[in-house]
Image (cartoon, rainbow, N blue to C red; front, side, top):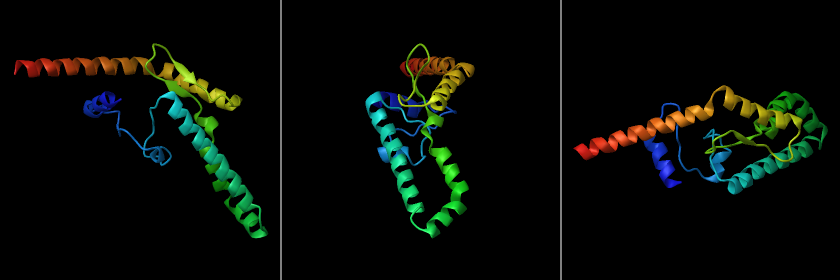
Length: 157
């Protein structure tokens, strides 16, 4: 992992703003768009985030239904709550990508519904449509060639 992090830091790829290792509390802050992890800790992170979102939703629902003032406040803020609900809907981001394989593998959440499953299929479709595997492979080959050329240049010096 450390070697991969070093390679990504030194690659200076124009399409990649590599942040490096992040703490768990960074995941939900929006500081990074993609988090790469092995399956066990990734599953813990995503399940924790989903459970926390459900808990906050339940707490808000309870608080907003206590008094007539809070109910009125909810009615006034309802469009904002709908935007928040849509943004936090795990079905819309369903589908973890397994990289490092020779084909496309998308892992869908086991308890998802048809909308979530369709989102995972869309992820796979986009990977094919935008030739993601070819782009990753080409980038790795190009990087390996640059590394080799750099080593040859250093050895000649």
